[in-house]
Length: 384
Image (cartoon, rainbow, N blue to C red):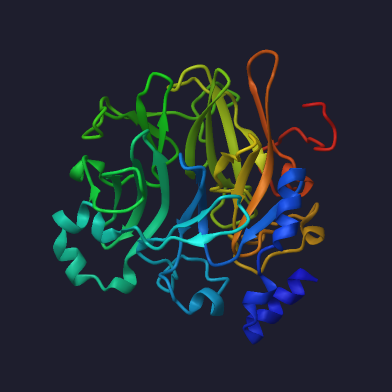
């Protein structure tokens, strides 16, 4: 039924009503139950990123259109790729005290606030604004102010690492690394237990930063899961980040189930290590349709992962996707907007970490998954 409605609204343009977020009461119930995916916000977005701030508000950002772009409702299945991309050049921000009610907080950062507008002004003059793109912004609390990282293909193919001057997410912004930030695809930040901040990018390069964020403190190294033959493998191709869970470093990364671009489902994977530099375990499965999601904890300590629409056809219903080979093209069950999916994070007796989506329609790979993984039934307490 959902697929029929999705196709219908493409024809008649009734996107808002059909793809609206779940009702507040349903979201509240779902948050408490922590067993099924919840559609918490509508609107065109990719790479949704949620972080709980020091003021006890959740902050949401991601790859978004410019405010007021009519295509947000008229062209909801725009992939965000290619010359007709809907992606804009401003970081849009929403805040919420409860993951239910979201307030729009404006556009506190744009490409004009980054280093490249200052050192490559000719590109900003000659490339039309309609071709500027700000991709995959992330916000990280440094203890006294915020850091923002993102990537951009245009007007300069580069990234920014920008810092606020105070504890609120607004300008003016500082760019302490200057041009040294270069181009880092899907950059992320991780703070180690000793206080060192690391930059993570691509799939996967990491390097420690100097305390003042003015430069790298050491050369970058490549990390990834261990293949069956002991060689260094790849966690995916983008959307990588690191978390410290128990005594383990956990590397997350995104890839297509078929390992072919835009074929199959867009999934999230992980690997664990005793040291940030590795060696890491074999690649493991977090969840189907969770590619480039954010793992975050709510105020009650429950783990969630953000999810979004990333496909070349309207979303499938849950029933359609179950057991279906999706390798023909890019496909998903996620509606346009922000979905959050409950995650189980367990420390095993040996100290290793088990991470998996709890919703059965996200918990296991489909038949198009190239790598073979253990199957887990979320309703059972036994871990594979």
